[in-house]
Image (cartoon, rainbow, N blue to C red):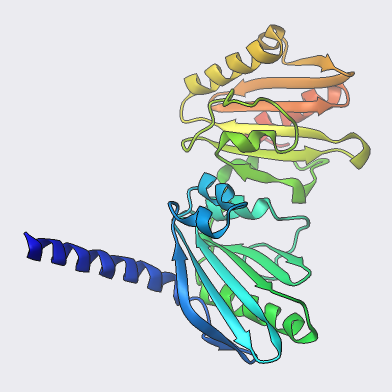
Length: 297
């Protein structure tokens, strides 16, 4: 029995080590005078909150598998911290990235956000954060080199979620596109409900996007369910909470002279919130249905 336990523990360590190696292969040992310092640290869903208390729920909500954290040091310069998150699927890595994106930039990976003292990007199933503790002329040179190196080492590119194909392009704010599959993010742009009114879970893909000019933004929500009946249930819940009439009239005024619309297209629940007028809401709903059917927008 004792020997069986020892063998099991050895196999467990070997499995964890093999998994870890899949992440550290993407990170350089040194770059531009910065050298990896100390041991790589790994965190998993059950331990992530000990590492990043304020941000852990974000990654957990996208079903991440593990994170590698590595610190780089150079004499006379601030530390550089690199984190690479294995999000299991490209759509999850993209979804996490949409929380940080403020503009469209593909300088690194499949999309990146450049900040003061930080570069964030996603590629394939990975989300990467590169941060300098303080910003200097040397870190400004090194962070881009680090991002380019890591991006190059991740050979594969992941596919974007299919649901994005059904977003009408007219009046779309591209950098606002926000992908998720946990109900807490349904309120990202416009409050809908405290609870899981629309039955969003790991089997559903959802996207939010902004439309229109800055002074009168309105919001498109598309949710793809595994079955038509689940989409019908979501529409019923939405109608019960907002207005029963929406089951028969897809577009109506809710409050403050703003228009709301909701409609089904097979497995899709399509909803427009905070619309400026009835025509804009109707046009957006119809645009999604046309793209979903494969017709012209």
